Image (cartoon, rainbow, N blue to C red):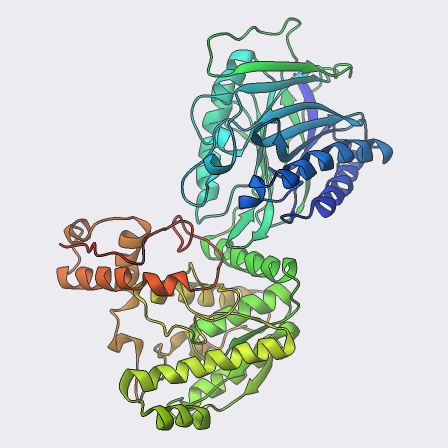
Length: 572
């Protein structure tokens, strides 16, 4: 066996910033070279960022990506990094748009590989944009046959990994931009273990880290041996270059001829002499995060990058003293610093004393700035001039709060954060254009209410264990939730218990199960039918909601595309 020192560059790129992303490749390659790496791998579409969506349809963008790749190859050589092999993702155009991987060495592009399996489910629309590759690129370098694959190629049976096994490769490089979902790290591991066995060779799996609009990427890069052993595994949500000596089989003197397979094999060889036969030392396997820590990290990363990459420095949100605004504020404080978080308490005639005191306590704990702007007089003007009563009177309070936040955004340049959660958004329990639904980003958009509470408890427990100030006021966690739009109002007046509601929503929204199937699970028929009606009737509200970090298998947005005008209703 040989010991090939491989560096996995788990880095954060930005869509459209080809120059900045190229600079990251240069800096991280230098870091890998300093660690003695023979090969450094970068994520899928590293040069362009991911996902670029309809930018792919612009010939100028595809040409810019190809040009950036050629310039990068030259820049690496000029920086004295021409002797380390670099695998990097980009967009190619050979007459058709391609999701591509390139092998760079000695100032030139040695090989190009095109993604074969194109995902067309969930948030992925790659058949809209790309043509599939029809060959497996294999580069013989340092006496090792290295196969190049891209992301979805590892998620599907057959194709590149089957062909890699037939071709007798020594290593499969799989570059990724694989979005985070809860528990996906466990799925990835089992999947890579199957593919490594299929290829009969170790897999070097590198994934991006960071946020891009609704998507967040957790890294979790790893090297898996053919027997399923974790040779190395990087931590989640941490940028860095992670280096490991990978035991690989030396290439056969005569390349294996591959015929009759789904893909042809395109072989190329470098002039590098084979490595000596040496044993590889053990690599580091980072511990896994518990569920709440994993989700919290995703939400912090998603918000931080949305703020940073869109040119904001500060955020503003309504601080009501409730659990949702408290968790959003705590996420924001961790993402960009408490000093950059601005809260606004907007009490009305129905606001409780504890709402105001809890909001003040939250700001103090986070080091945030809190302004109090009573809205009673403004609301009275609307109610009197328009003769509003009932729900219309309640909702004008909520909309005044949303208008005030947008005014502060216009005045001071803050990004407005919506504070609503997935449960309320699912059933339409939100006033459109209020403080819970208005703004530029919604950190809890994909977080069910029960998980909001679980995150708050976990975050306070983690702070206590570290000897830090609890970021979330305990009273915000324990008190019953209320919109406080009328005297004595509670969420439970209008909605089922959240534990029960979230269990039904998980089946109806995330699982796409029918009403009859959910009732068969033992839920009350009237409850299930009511929840389904509420969900179906609220699509128009969801279409107007700001983007928010995806953490589930099926988030509202690109994951779940239903018509607004729709007379279909589920029946039991």
